[in-house]
Image (cartoon, rainbow, N blue to C red):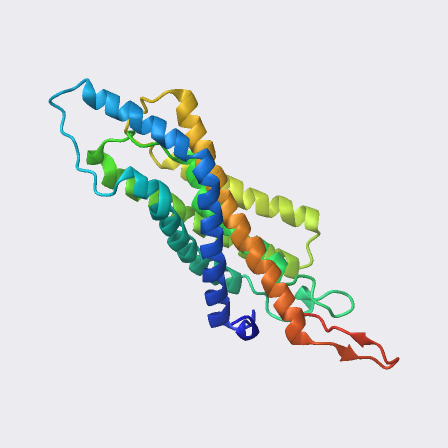
Length: 273
């Protein structure tokens, strides 16, 4: 399979990104075993103690046992989730490909960015939309927080934030490419792109209403869970982007092969991305 991997072929990129996503999801699940699971156990214990103090409260049936959730179930969920994220990452990786031309070449005609740099940019874009922005506006809560009656409302707000964040970040990436093509200095370009990200996303966060549910768990437990969740998701995107990027750039160089020079030495040609 490694010999069939070609970062220039869309299907190969998607398949490779899925595999990298599965590995990244499993890595995140290992981290969450030690960071999030103890907090979840404590949150569930608090919820059960509240139910015990209310004898007439309805008790929801347990569809999946806690033991399965902590073990194979979580690894399977994060592996499948990582694979799904890999599809989106692969699409972003392909969309960020620069057309050949003077704007994307160095002074000697070589490419200024290889597949690794593009993978890092794609991972940053995806992490910003799917992890960072939701954490800033709608940070995750441990079990027992949230009224089931407001689930649909919370879901559409969360998905709307992700969608709008993707639109803004994709537009900023496109703006960056256009400014680079026009010869803007890196410092000026980064300022312009930064404003194009911060201002619209700030307006989005201000416009979207907060979740209606109250959070009635200890602040220490709440923020331990939130930080653990954030760390797990950032690890997933990091492993996905860095792992895929490292494999892609290595494969690019292997496919390019050495090129003989007039002096008899061999040089590897610039990779395409």
